[in-house]
Length: 139
Image (cartoon, rainbow, N blue to C red; front, side, top):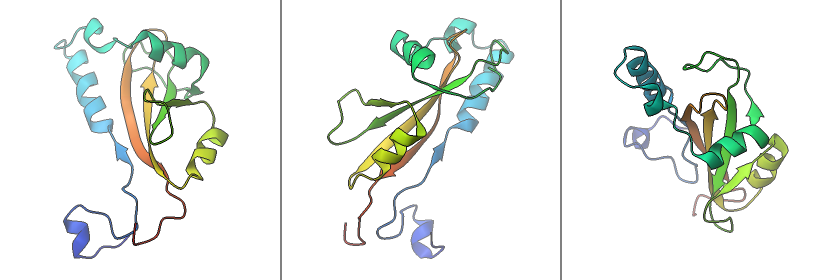
């Protein structure tokens, strides 16, 4: 990463991939609105059935407390989107699988969703690029 004038424009340096986007501030705002009573439980606990299925069977455990039901049931579900993947993305179930995708020459987008299978809370936690190995400054 460089700290030259191009970094002020918000564009990555030549050949560099964009970085991680963390959605923690948005998450904290939603949780705050829920705790103030401005959002109901049904407003924030609305996970899609497929996301809940993935959370129960294909997620990586987080052992973090859910901000809504306050049980230690949070898990992270990761989806990767990009060329040569299904249009609905691919659910990544292990670090080894993510490492394999990272070796691809094309850049993919990974989205990590935190999910509570108990109360259906879900929120996009972060996104980051995966792959792009072998890219040059000309790409």
